[in-house]
Structure formats: structure tokens, C-alpha cells
Length: 166
Image (cartoon, rainbow, N blue to C red):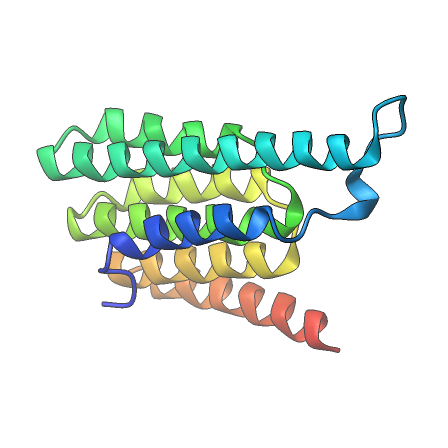
């Protein structure tokens, strides 16, 4: 399966923490009396803390899924969405949701997966992240046997991707 490796997102989140300290977006620095380098470090720390929290929530969600406690797993996934990452980090959120919803699909809980992906769509703005979520929705519909909806979401994903590369 495409998303069967649950450690994949955890590794991505850990790697992103390392990259945060290498590339703070200069345009994101707030205007104020603080030294710009201190502002960048402050933003880096905040982002690193969010990434650490997201990793923990993701790992908890996966553990709850293993135990069969789906409500707690979905609650942990929602905690990731509520962290509101900047656009350039949304792909990590989309990846985490992909892994969690794939596990839900394995448990035949397509309804919970679709609900979680709908919430993820509301929390993302980047075209590539939204396209990934549409692809995941399509995959869940396909696995559930709803081919018409699967086709609709594959088309939406492809439309977003084609607009992005033009």
C-alpha cells in the first residue's frame, strides 16, 4: 500500500525540524523592536515546537489506531490540524493525514477518514497539499466502492495539479 509505512511521516516531521534552523522565511519576520536575528530564532523555536507537537500527536494517533480506539486517534489527528502550520509545512500535515486515514481505511472506517480529510482541506491552503488530500479522498472512496465519487476527487486533484504546473 502507498501509505502503509507509518514511520514515514514521523521521519518527515523530524527532518523538517532540522531544516527549520537552516531556512527561516525572511518575509515572515515581524516588524518590531527585536533584533531580526532574535525574531527569526523565535519563529524557528515556535515552528520547531509545533513540529514536535505534531509528531507526538501523530504517534499517539497511530498508537490509538493500533489499540482500536478510533475516537482518540481522530482527536489526536485533529490536534495536528489545529496547530495551523505555515504553507510551506502543510505538506507534512497532509502526509500525516494520509497515513492516519490509510490506517482508518484498513479498518474499513471510510467515514472517519473522509471526515478527517474534509477537516484537513479546511486547514490547508497550498495547492499541492489540497491536491494530495483530494487524492486521498479519491482513494478512500475507491476502496469503499464508491467509484463515482472516487472519479470526482481524482479529477479535482488532477485539475489542481495541472493548474499548479502551468
